[in-house]
Image 1 (tube, rainbow, N blue to C red):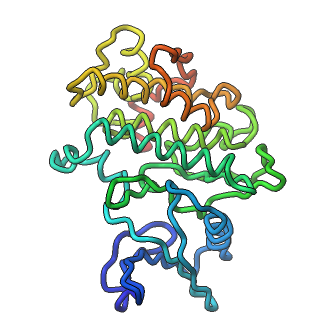
Image 2: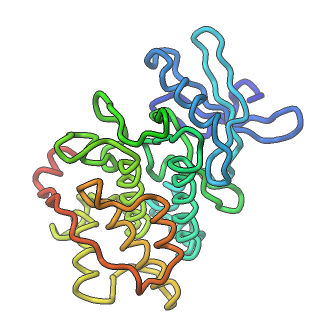
Length: 303
């Protein structure tokens, strides 16, 4: 199928992804899991969760292989790769490929995908690793939520779940996943990760960036929140029309609501979709996220 793993598409903590082709000519992405990675829980999670889904914004699992210690997942091929390369890039040609209208459509598409996982499946699915790297783009740049290795199925459509240890990627993990003093782990934990991702789409950078000159710009959510309060000029590059200004402002307000520290303050993904589809004037600016920005010295020492 992969011509002896000839063309590698990417590498992750789970293993490698290779380009392949089925007998009917369909292109596929074959994800090979490392033999020594855990007891197969990630593999079972992925098959059990994404195998239950059918949605335009969820990547399609076409099949899998389980032979002894060898495990592989066969997915539909996404020719435009991950959203990550369109956000964090020095290449201006890549950045110009996706304008603000397309970024907005991607943000709404991912929200619809998560709404489906949380509300549309017979069994509620919590993803636990929403980030730009795990959002794949098809030939028309339609976004697909992928990589369900950390996902959890919620029995009886429960939302609050018990979980040992934190799971996810640093920079996107909700506070309650680290410490239960912030609240219970639930579908709102995915909402937090989604909000952090949306703000990175707006800023075109990691939310914590040690390369900036001023400490006030170090943590992007606080910087953009202050701009939003003080002025209608958000300081975001590439906005050329009133429509684009409205879309970007919606993304910022929605993102800031999603990263509220208390899970109860965050909107559901259904509400996020409503906020995107409604009027900008109906959106209230949320309270400032209360976690303080990291100091430069702390970030430098851990980056």
